Length: 249
Image (cartoon, rainbow, N blue to C red):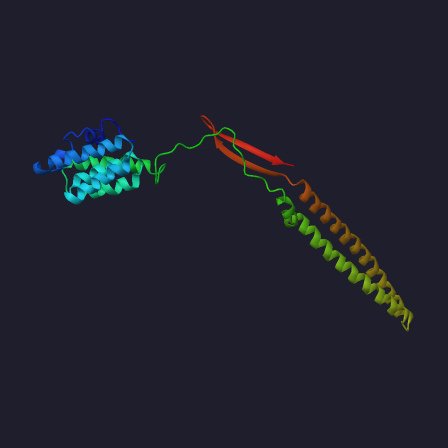
């Protein structure tokens, strides 16, 4: 994350790049010794020990240089959020412009690293050229068959046709009985003709309604058993994204 010519290199070598710019002559030896001991711990990978050395030194002789060194340690181990806070705190001490610029560069580096490493060391995304789609739900189509719009239209129309046909047929039977009870020939013929018309219409509507309901049943069956189901998964291969498709018919 930090280049070999960066301020980290200068600090670990305990050269006067930052130390001399922010400490007074009487504190110089103490600060150099503290930074050197912290650097030795960092070289061994013992970051917590290095931070503890700096914390103890701050309690004895508080100074901005310790804040800067702590920031570089946090950046080195990938804890960029903490590093940014420390760099910004360092800038509040009114340090020389050269040191302030090093802190701003550290903030810039950490902010660039945050999207891929928000809370810890930077990681490399796992790559695969064989994407694996999420498991299919074998009962999904069976749960969706009743939502088919065509099947629903056929069923509703068929039920309405049956209801209308049944009503016409019942009315025709009533008119037929009324014709048989008629007192005059004219009334008999009128009632009889009306009964025949309703009877024919009722039977026709019953037939149409039944056919529509059968059609709805067939449609629902096809949807439940033959609905095409597909899943798509995207993965990253060596150079380009790959697309995987799984379908069930």
